[in-house]
Image 1 (cartoon, rainbow, N blue to C red):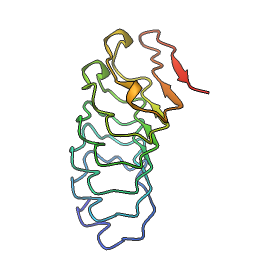
Image 2: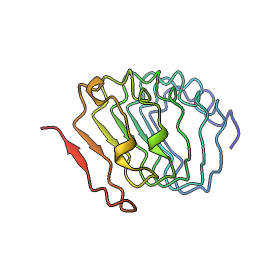
Image 3: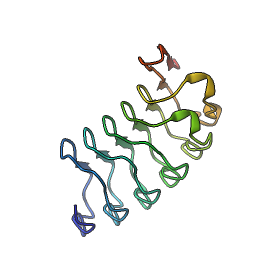
Length: 154
């Protein structure tokens, strides 16, 4: 996909790139889309994302990246997303036990995150969940390791 595919679409609110067999995305693909609120990149072949791919998306509230082949998430990838409320990273190949414990830092509005069915064992995770005051739901389900844990705050 060309890096300027969405250039000048400044009023765009939602992008759906699901079921496209995408193997990579240029780090500038979403550049300038300051009104973008939702991104869905579901069921593709992505293995990694550049840490700057979401930079400048000041109004982004929801990211769906489930059912890709993601193997790594940089600790800074979500750092600019101050309005982010939902992240779905389920069903990838992310070894979550090696995620930097600060990869969710600064996401004070985050309410929902799905990390289920990745490559990890729960006892090695060190996420700083106490820094997420709005968090209502997080899933660590992992059928491969027998983890069946959802945390729901009421």
